[in-house]
Image (cartoon, rainbow, N blue to C red; front, side, top):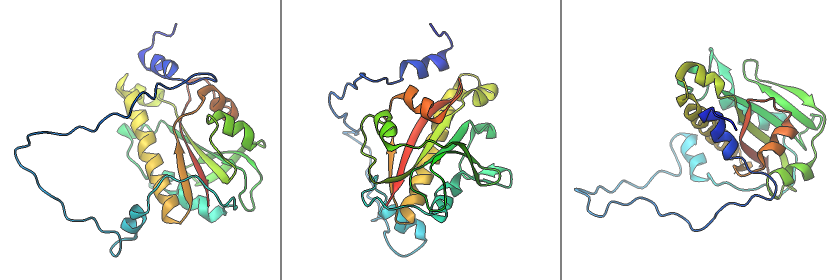
Length: 228
């Protein structure tokens, strides 16, 4: 049995075929019954001002339905938050350890061969590592999620030992936080272009790792389904 607390956490939270989630009831949000003071906020802006606010007003996790292809320009904008600029990437990373890796699974991308690509943030490039990109195995790995309209998947994975080298076991927490930062920015970048994007956090870990060809010590974090 794995004794390393961080690795044990990842092992114990894996989902395999046949596993079921509890899904007993939706938890309630925290509410203070007797606050000392309440302060209403002005309505948030949905138009005008920076384009960011207009994109945020339409930020909804939606599965692609049209089934149309994406362009390289579409993908470039979605991946832009993950790119390295002046030695840093577009999201926070504790100690700049950057335990995050990104992979693109191209089903229908104009001018791009189908397959699995590793994203190289320093040069903002995609390196093909496998020519195989089939919808059915990915749908099964994502626990039956409908991918008929998907043009591509953006898989974010974690190598928590990079953070652990600086912060010990707390590095595992930082690695998960980093996946959240990056996924939210990529989601916002997709929606800001009028694309459909859906974050799939529930999946069969070992199947996703197999389809991506991940080595030991690298774990799937979240998979964004992209399309129109």
